[in-house]
Length: 120
Image (cartoon, rainbow, N blue to C red; front, side, top):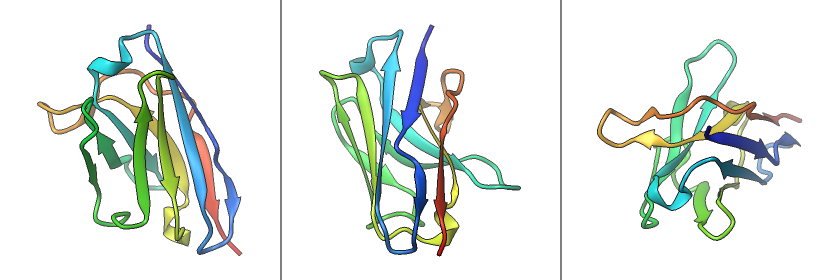
């Protein structure tokens, strides 16, 4: 059973930074592309960053230039470095393995997520 354990969220002021981590277990991590999704209150969950098993990355327009996704295949962990945070980045952040052949629909059950709040 694939499990995701997200951590690193918190309260930060606008312009600040956070680094999220997602520990993955129960699967051959190196076989999968990985992604970070987020869900803000009253909004649908959206994919904001993804990274292939080979390390190629792609970002949603709203975070491009501010967020950086990376992975450590030895530690089965995926990271999201978030800089220049804005109040509109406030959301619960989740990781999962997006299906690259099905419009990046997540392939596994969600973890608990980690809350990011950007506010004065």
